[in-house]
Length: 113
Image 1 (cartoon, rainbow, N blue to C red):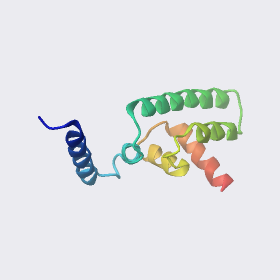
Image 2 (image 1 turned 180 degrees about the horizontal axis):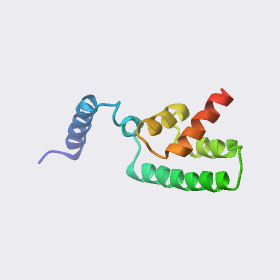
Image 3 (image 1 turned 90 degrees about the vertical axis):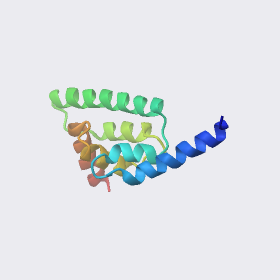
C-alpha cells in the first residue's frame, strides 16, 4: 500500500491537472476557492456569512436605506486572507451567487477606489 504522503502528493498532482481542465470562465468562484486552498468548512462558513449579509442587505434596502458601506466593511473584514476582495466579488457575480448583494458591493468598491 502506498504511503499517505505519496497518496496526498498524487491527489495534489491530479488536482492541479484538473484545474488546468476547468473552464474558469464558467466557475470562477470555485476556481478561486481551489487556488486559495480553502477547506470545505471555510467555504461553508463564508457562504453562510454571505447568505446572512444578503438578508441584511435586502432588509436594509426594504427599510429605505441607501448607504450600504457597512456591509462592504463587514464583507471585507470576514473575507479569507487568500481571497482578494474585488476578484472574489467579480467571481461570485460571474457565477451568479448572491447577485443583488455582490452588485451593490461591486458598486461600492468602484466608488471607494
